[in-house]
Image (cartoon, rainbow, N blue to C red; front, side, top):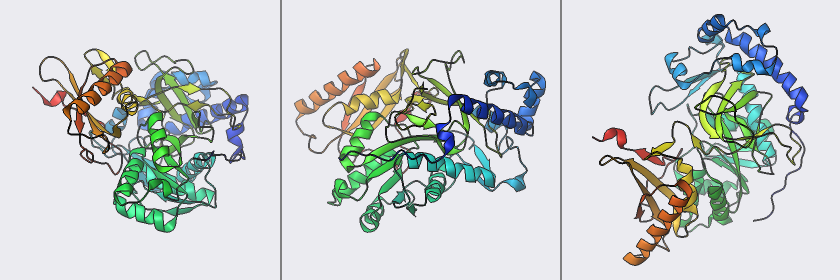
Length: 440
């Protein structure tokens, strides 16, 4: 794989503001956000009780006086009770799938959509996308924010778009071969699925036209990045967003790939201890809390994302002065507590990628057959390593278990399964099934 280099031309001046100018801009926009939030009954009641007005926000430290907002608050104000504008002022509505309860809907004004496109354009540009490129978007187009957000960001740059959407992987590969796109946008797990299906069609995924890819929509590890790059001979870039705030575009990697640059002129990002709610230091992992500074329809204030990451305020070689965030390593509400040990699924994924013979397809099942938790990790074995010799399979199981114990400090039951056994996802991959609440 050749070295990937893009020029340091900056898309927007705000990405290179000196720290003092950025904080001054954030303060102005925070006061404007508080003023907009006064139009939301949920916030207005809290502000009245706490004596909060736009004029009372005199420094960024006053952010701590503002209330946290949670997904439960969105559901309590279902469907659009947190909107600060009239229904007729909404240009679009997106939302979550609602697979774990009521969906959460988010509204956008036309100005919100314009700014959202610009935010997505920033990280795509930082990762090398130019007007001369063609991009295949293999995200779903619908309530999910990913497809439309990235689509309009690509248009903002001026590149050509193939809106392939998700699913029908064989067709996706035919499109890539026929139309020769330079870049792919999808979830990382779906990119691996494309590579796998291509090989089954006797197509070398490394020989496809793709030069780089922008992945989001799910957590993935650095080891998975290396796996995708090796299998598809491209450069993979990470980006972050969530529908409750706006969608993709909150942050994304530049060519240096040493963290995702946060669009700080649009978002105030805190990193807190999820138990004490106190801020953590740079490079220390905590829960991201995000305030949207420029959204008209839904001025979300101190939204608790539950995503665990760290922040870095140091300089970047690309010239951007915005703070960077690490990749998300887990969620505070998805963290597994196994016999008193805190475990993130990403720790198990990292362990699996260190064992030769495993594929990137796995499923973690947590159960409680008696009084103790039991974790079973189902792992697909690569075809060339799958064997009917019990001794070889047992040796592989033991190596996987040792790696997981070293990474996560728990013992697991490792179940090796044949290639193509585990279900493939067209969107966000399902990695964990917790059966404990269904037993008994």
